[in-house]
Image 1 (cartoon, helix red, strand yellow):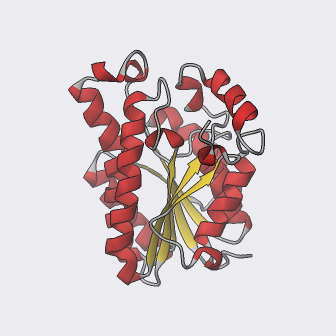
Image 2 (cartoon, rainbow, N blue to C red):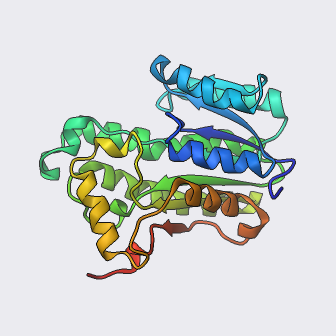
Length: 255
């Protein structure tokens, strides 16, 4: 029970295949008591059904991360429910579909703004909301992808937004370190999620990983959950501002 007595909030569960759900399950298995958010009525039922498996009293809240008033309302409710907060998972990303097709050079100003607001600035806003509740220190974990570092065809503006997310992680780690709050990213290899299916050529990407990664595969949601536990636990107590690659070793390869 590595996380016994800890409380956390999870942003980004969409369905049972979500990376956010895998990490939430792993955190709960190790003893953490969790709250969840959902974005829009379309996802409400899914999140309520999944989060409800942790108990009828599980806190489930609406939150559009582009709205400061929603974020303030969420952390007010979390403070009233838990009194303090130890963990936060940011697994939120979005770009308009047409911005993930064609050439990056044709990205519209609005698509660029939306992708960065939802996928990168939201981490800053959520960290700012969570920090006052992390009175005993805490661990903030965000989800990234290799497209932040190198060009991945069809990832386009999302790769640029993930680069901003990773840079934000470092600056947040510096600001929040004196409060004993750690901020890290997990850069996951491709896994079969709802979000992944929106990327053109995803099946070819999986085959490429199988051919080139040292482990001859990408990763599983269970492995991502275990990595999330590590970063949330005392095992990761000395780690902040880092990007941890869980991708079968693909990131080390030059060819």
